[in-house]
Image 1 (cartoon, rainbow, N blue to C red):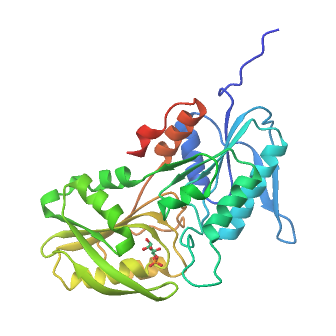
Image 2 (image 1 turned 30 degrees about the horizontal axis):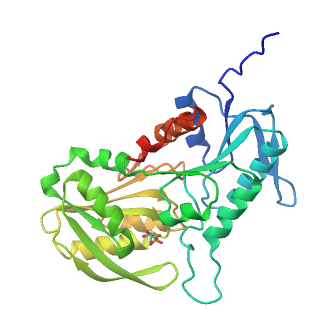
Length: 318
Ligand code: R5P
């Protein structure tokens, strides 16, 4: 008797609760449904997971961003992986659009953990074969995993958004020394000059601008960052730039991990526009026209398709 092939060739996509709109959009791009699963809590607040369909022998992708509430979302991901592994999925890929704990990728003082390494270890230990992610805060985090990691970049999508602006009138700004490589790549793609702000953190989650290099006078300044947490880095940068006479200041970041009060702070600033991706789900009521969202869904869908078909993903890195 001929064995009937699985309708989607054995590819299944499941999602935790962190970013269901993105999961739905990726599923739409792939032409599949998001897999049926119970993702909830017991009365004592322990996470409760149950995969509600057969995954035996299938190539399973499970999507979860490590966004707020971070620890809860990580636990959901781990338990989903464990459930899928015990249900005999053939291969499990963790699709982590935003990888959390990434700012703790090294010790900055004695007796601190290297949290990003621990999170990488527990994801791998839970039972994934590979990881698909976007814009790790520090690219070296890829090396914290001993399994394959496909590390995509959102730069092309964000740059595309700004292509309608005249490059002769732009300047790309790195809001800190650590982001110079990212901003330099961005400005090369746009054909614009670079300005750099040097900041310091007197204590966690507080940023102070020290100095700025570059000319922004009469130009549209675009601040480029990988993530926004408190919004302090961007708000401070906007103020420093405004003292130097730009036409206007815009900003973009891949991961909108908005902490409490971040959106209010950003909207109260003189920022003309903020462009972010949907690696992290935004509050549904957010309707300010200065905040634009560009989607990484088709990029992730194409990467998932290629991984499933054992085709090269390298072409997507650009
Ligand atoms: C720092 O190294 C990062 O690239 C971001 O600039 C930082 O995480 C943003 O945090 P916040 O919004 O709290 O200033």
